[in-house]
Length: 379
Image (tube, rainbow, N blue to C red; front, side, top):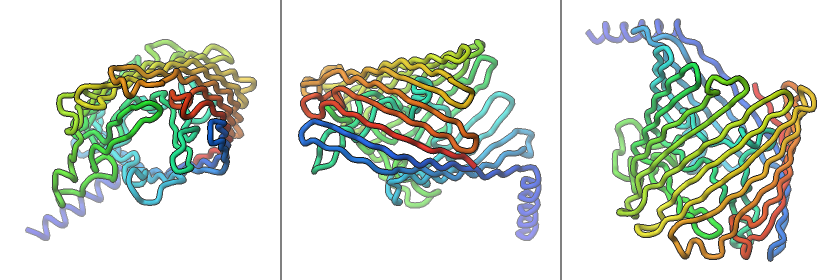
């Protein structure tokens, strides 16, 4: 019987393999960045950075008639050295079961999410707010923008979700049993707190070393609903997301962590205009909370089919009930101009940014300027 079972397994694998299609793709980006900040101590720095990624994807038919897709990616950013939060442990890992326009997805970093500002910073590079522009700690610039990035989206935690494709766009729901992180927002800084090893170092293996620390630690459950699509209007691109993460164990009785995002852009001829609004609420303790709100508008103009100019104006503010966190907080303002040149296999993007009141803390970080040039290719 064991022999029969083994032969059956081999035949099954052969049958599945014959119906499957496996692809390998990837991308490589290299950049040069320069930063200057005139707040004491005066500091400036520059240098190269890189991102690289390999994608393994497989798709085909199941023996019950359903479609499936599965895969994982290996991402190696410039600072990935094998520790926590490295992309080769938790980058785009998934198994999808598909029936028509309905997809049930198991994995991490795969379901649709709001962790992009490309709909408003259409020609520029990355997030609207800059990192490393101020906030000196042991001689190192550590300040980060208070413009919300992913607004607490938990797509980088392992979970299960469902995506429904319709004529007007895609609707999604994602459930995460253990949120990967929470953050305490204070004047001039966002301090990330580890919620669980599940989201930060790839999670436990299958069935072994099962402990509370491996699976949960202090993290609690989270959920997110989202929409991306054009609402049936040609040239329109909309995204809308809402998520909530239960407070971590240390903040029992406090507020949940919530995030909201509404944004999009509209193309007409050579012009594209975009807008973004996002808010995230943080429970710093059982009795205090803070909110970060970001608003921005952007425009892109295609000079030729391969050359475009872009611009963004953004504001970010902090509010809430925490007197300590809100002390001396100013409105952060960012202005971005950018240029993009599509050379076919290689794309060049250049961006210049000026930021007033970096991290919302004029007395600590002041103003800063940064510029970046990035070359990108896919294969």
